[in-house]
Length: 230
Image (cartoon, rainbow, N blue to C red):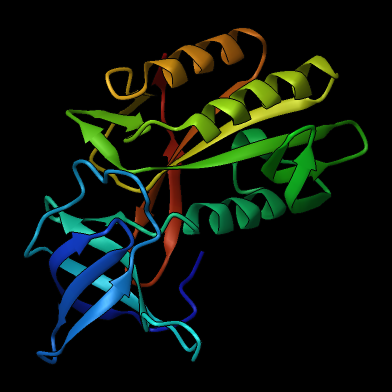
């Protein structure tokens, strides 16, 4: 997935009220950018760190920038939670994810039962529902999800089980927007109920695909699928 606009470089001053971020641009100007990540952002917040923002043309929006990434431990960590969905849609459509190849039609935001899933992929043999989650939380070599309690995430897992029970394919796709981790797992200490629900879903046939990507100011590209422990 390539960025369609040239990103603007700056330094993080602070994140506050969850959705707002003050950044000092290289020009010396201080701007307020929108932060799409509503979680705690554990392990990817560091005041004074380098960041990149994307400019926004919408005259009706108060913030004229969106926060895209931050440099942590010498490498970029993706912050924008909408990018994993865009990347997943493009990657499934183009057959760039090994375990999700061979689909002839891909749709975004498809309702099933009482949930709305990020993707539905279809071919002549099967229908596959895919829920995409953004992962930035790190402890040691582990990429962990979630970084805050997520009742909505638990509901998605329960509905994916229903998808599987109706004879369709059900996939949890975790897009890990950092390269300094080696294994995916759940943050049991933060949301034990989500961790328990993922284990139940996996045991009932829901597939888990932790996809590590490399984030740069030009693009986000898939590196590999990581192993997982649940």
